[in-house]
Length: 345
Image 1 (cartoon, rainbow, N blue to C red):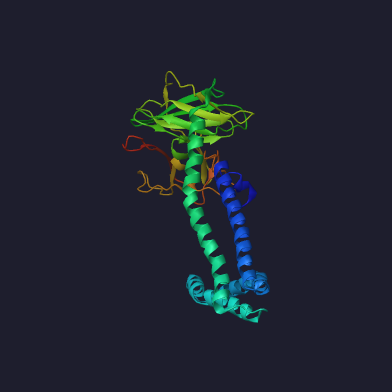
Image 2: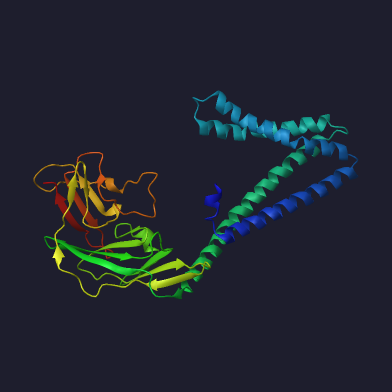
């Protein structure tokens, strides 16, 4: 995990696993102290020390016994080779080398004592893994609870976004309301919530992929025209890091309907307004009637595209000829999606 990704992990999770690591280190040191005292009491302190010093070379040899066969036999299924080595060569190498080093040390250790020294690190790792697995959901729950409380306690402020434009795009009884809110340049909200008639959608900007897309300093929403545009709230952090929230100003009336007009280019097109990539459907069928199949080729994003900004860029080009383009906006009430379609002249 890179440092940039590590900074995205909630602080509570990092603290919980950091404390677990400190406890594990302290327990390992205390275990070694007790183990050393026990062997010194038997008069075998030097033999214990020799085995413990040899533990790192033994670990390297054991890892080699696991991975070298995978390198020597690349045609054999890697998972099969790995599992087979994990249950055969790894235990043989780990315990066998402990027995050999214990026997060669002076004073020598018995087979039982050498086996004990081999078991202790394995048992410690198992306990640590089990503890981490048990701690993980608790830590994430604490982090999510604190995050939720922070959004609930966000201070209501005047909206930094203003309603820039609203369009009613209609076609054969179907219609889509497309609205744009403009805010500070190069500014993106931490979260967008949407209040639907029967439930509240938290972080709708990341879950309602067909209806909402963002660009730096702008929020674009497309909605079925026969249902009211739902109220929305945005959240952001001020200079000190405290969460703020504001209600987006909603349009009081809708303008006159306009047709769905597409500007065509070679193997591409430009839409009359910004829409989410996930709402844009294309077809290469050139029949005079509507095509039987559309695909969401426009929804495929390249590695250089930001997943946060999902608006289809103007002048988007397809890898194949585009004869039809459509906007499909799904409904939140389970009804059929609203489609607007345009054919290349």
